[in-house]
Length: 138
Image (cartoon, rainbow, N blue to C red; front, top):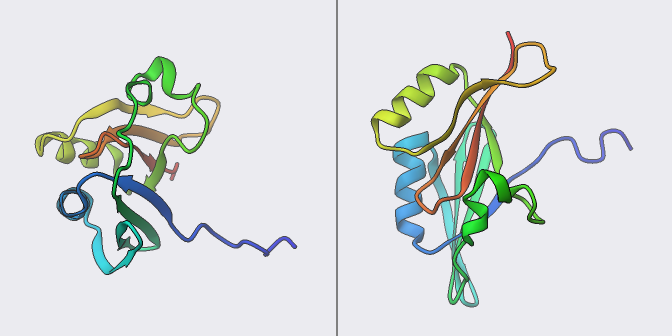
């Protein structure tokens, strides 16, 4: 059973503007549009960068993200997935490049507490979704 689930395949994210999100992830994080399809009431696109995959849904009538998801003091108190993390090779360089493009930096590069050299930062995408950038220790 140890190899029953060898790795995460993708993360699904609901957005209000599919094209704007495709453009944001392509232009800021280098994702490529792999394919699109429709479901009843939804347009869907799969984005890929290396082994990272995002399935982006534009759903008719989807509720907007709540303000509680934007505040550091409250977002961890809400159930469900609150962010996803992407590996980066150079956290400082990545954050600087994204900041120069106008991407909102929520938490600047920081060390993981009680861990040997791993580092992280948090940003917001175009729909205000929280995205962690993670650099493993050498």
